[in-house]
Image (cartoon, rainbow over all chains, first blue to last red; front, side, top):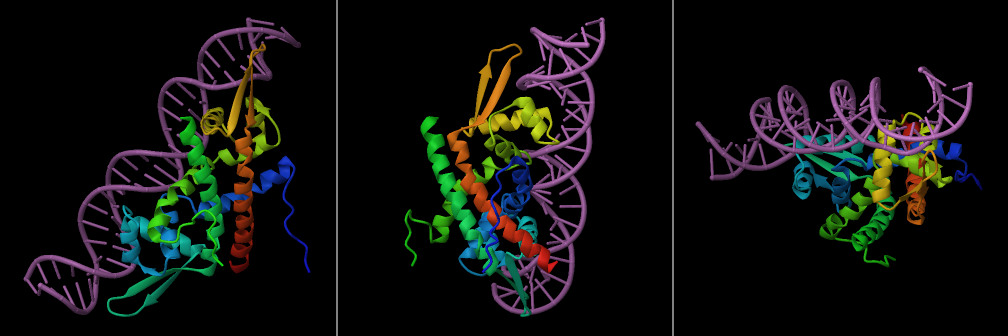
Length: 121
Length: 121
DNA sequence: TTTTTCACTATCCTTTTGTATACTACTTAC
DNA sequence: GTAAGTAGTATACAAAAGGATAGTGAAAAA
């Protein structure tokens, strides 16, 4: 049995180094469109134009760019069916689904934050 | 098995609405400098120039701007001591410390992500 | 024959974010 | 009298992110 769970940092120096993975995590969710795309795919596989409809306001250019980024991070899988016309299906990978925990944590903190900020204004 | 304690969303529509708090959480950590500033303050109260030294590369303008934002979100407290010369102390609020959980979650996912991305390249 | 659907790409433009550099006002030390 | 430290501000600029609009090519529907 390995007991090599990452020791959480407790000096400033260790902590500064451990910023990089935090940044990585923030980056895969960064930007205006990744979150809605991911969430849309959490409810099932979708084609390009279906996602475009479910994410109101997004342009083709942005959707295409974000999907490529998500794919390069292994979060989304792109499957081409050589039907006529060509149909491309996007799906969340299992790994992509692992973001649920992260998103839930952010959501919980965010909900509390909203409440707090409303009360005192 | 799925026993929602605080009604986690399970339809696309509910989920889309619950994006806003997630965004709020992402926003308080967004940008190049907030994370290092927060982490530096997790190790104790600091003066302006001390933070500037501990966060290498940051300019006065950015530090000033980010501290103002963090203050407006109740994460950081600014205390002015009317000594000569004037000394200003920045500290994480208790609420600011509540970000630890969020950062730890992001860090854990990020560490796994780094490993995964290294192996397959 | 023109339009529509599919999944994009290309070009240009605006907005946001961050950088560089200089400057303020005050006081102590050299 | 000049430099250094206190905590910033002001101005100009560069880079990154995102938006608007048009175009690609094949096929099917009007």
